[in-house]
Length: 609
Image 1 (spheres, rainbow, N blue to C red):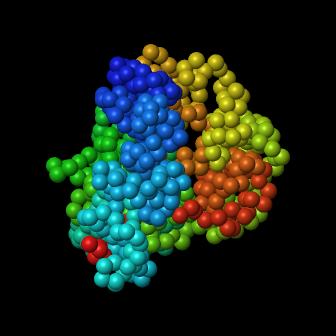
Image 2 (cartoon, helix red, strand yellow):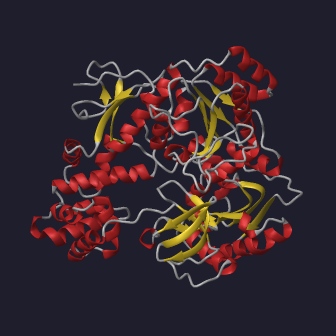
């Protein structure tokens, strides 16, 4: 697979000229041209605040660019600026998981950014179609309602026109608003449809042959179009039992994991030996000999893995089990729901204790809260000292566990420099020697990319020890461990094979990928050390979690639960945060996200006119 090249060179050059004229970094030219298209130069001259749409550009930088281009006519009350800052705030909110913002929160943020009339800025943004407004019911009893008003937002939050229900006014970007609504419609279709009739007696016999909560899952799926399944790593045996039962009934049953690591792990559990397409074919050539089928969500939707689509464009299957469901954002969820044929069954399975998706939304958590379909909670505990440790974290307890096989090791450090030194020592020497896990099977996890012990610093130190080289191609050398992010939120682990005029050649989960040099920045990073979000959905034989002193503010129970839970055999904790770690586990829940899915899954509320 070759990653598409960027925009035309002449377009990039034209953008580079206007950026230089406005005093903006010319390095922004490729991304700006890709975002704004062939008419990028004209767009920037007509509205310099369009630069704010480029990832990484902040309002004060766009203001300086606008002043340089517009001169005296540039002012803080310019409608173009108000709209651009409004959209930028909504985009920043999406990066932290929100699908919309409540109107008072948005106008307050606009005022803080120097917009003189925040209400007018919001109205202008709505009038130009750059954002949408909604009113959602605030009732806590029973299902909530929500829909987009036809005539813009109300003046304030409160009761609707008839005084019957309090509502909240939300503003969101169209892409996430439409995705969330499409997802709600698709899920409602599954809940209200009658699944394909396969023989109730056959399903019951399959359930009777299973054990514990696996039997509960099979019975729930037998009679419902949508089922939620919760549990830890050991609970994966239950979706595996469901797939086996469905296949025995003659159903076209598939499982889709968040990424290739999760896919391959589950495929090993169910005995699927053909998880990816043949190298010489863009589509798979059928299931494994035992009929089980396991793919990635991205591959399923793109058609590069899985059953393909029928004449109506729907996925050609009867049952889909989506693993790592907390990692599904609203856009991915909408695509999945839209792609399922009538009469199909969908099972969303995952551990509710892990971090939510990188993209906007909290789909799995919202569905659990909405209670619109059966929920099966696994009763299968994760085994061993690691299972005991992680299970305790899930309920807010960080307990010392007996680890006779050195399954858990705590390495105290005083500062970030020592944390990096001890991490390299663990990966390159201690873990291979004492645990028997080689460096290539050990993952390092740390809270962020920056800082003296972030992923950048750790990867630089690990590269120097494990694969030293000059980094002639964008800082990379053959043999480097990397992660490739073709789109935001999707992380593919791999290694550098070579580099030439075409770009950097990677091997990612057995697939050859070529990334052009101009696309390297922001899409390829060294991959010995990752953030917990990047590691979500995967498991490694050994994991080293690095917690330098400056990481204390980034810790939460879901972060610790996710990071510690990536270890299959051994966990080392490079510990420099003192009491911040048990405090985070006991007291810091997931950061709240503003979403609409739970409201959309219920009857709609009247909107004031």
